[in-house]
Image (cartoon, rainbow, N blue to C red; front, side, top):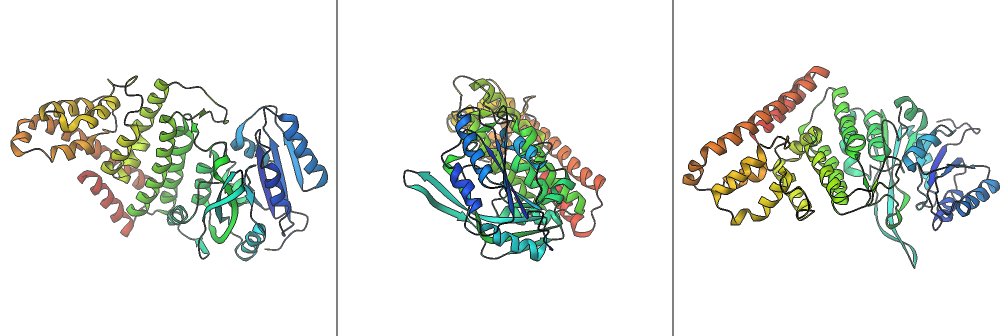
Length: 451
């Protein structure tokens, strides 16, 4: 890569929201880099303490011409703020630095060396995890590979490698600006935030590099979005994230059951964390990251909407229905049970799960029938628990309840057949799978039908 001295190698973006404690530390970590070819673009989203924060930013901009500061009249969040700042960057590679995080010493030098050697679309970097307290910033662990990995070729397989080896759902990695613009990725619409934006980027990149260097310092306990819940995030975060992964497989005309399952589990873990925040009473935020008040009933309904979503049901089938149902039952147990939901399918399922050992088997089958044939339970959540329960019954007990059991099995069989046909036709309609790839897809559909 031949460097244009008039163009900075790095454009580093920062959004500030009512944050001053670690702001100086964050900005100084950029200014103290040995690599000098950078610009720092900062958008102030503050809606309180505005003059103090803005005064700090203005002073840095006056003293360093590489620092450019902008001001919002209201908070629009870092995702929308990043999209706005991207229209003002002039560097070749872009990264995001949170106002409470920092770059490690000579971080940019190591990244620049990779860029000069490989010219990748993305450099995935290692990071350290830190805690901020009375004793300052203290390291609490890290995520960094022992060796570099260059990824080119099949994009679908690259996604699995990235998810397996990096802290992938974060924007502190380094992406070629021309690549992001070509793919229409601005981290707000339609590829929202780090989860979707970075997944879309890795699904489109022709060449990536995982750097064996700790570059970014993430101060975990000061994050202003950690532990929050993004309201309706299923629509603009998790469904688009999975679609980006699925589309990469279609473009490659490739299918691997094990790789797809790995990625599905990774996405579902993110959904599980969101559900835990939702049910745990976390502050709910809108798409612009402003608080939105939601009561317990609304949270319960939101949780059901997530579990009923057809894309989530597909991910659960990839994960393993029985395994994920146990995660969900444990997560939901006792949440709002006394106030809400006791008569809907999810409330009935959770109530049954807690009492199953003490309920007479005929009554248990009756309750299972009501839950699994409920018109809102479109994904038949509880089927794993039902099959496990039926296996504990004696032959006479199963014979006595045969009609009800067969009714449920028939409905589940129809559901699985429709799902398998949809997956198969979707891949065969939109791409031409041949050889081992077609065998893998057929094996996956067989797995669906037999489990």
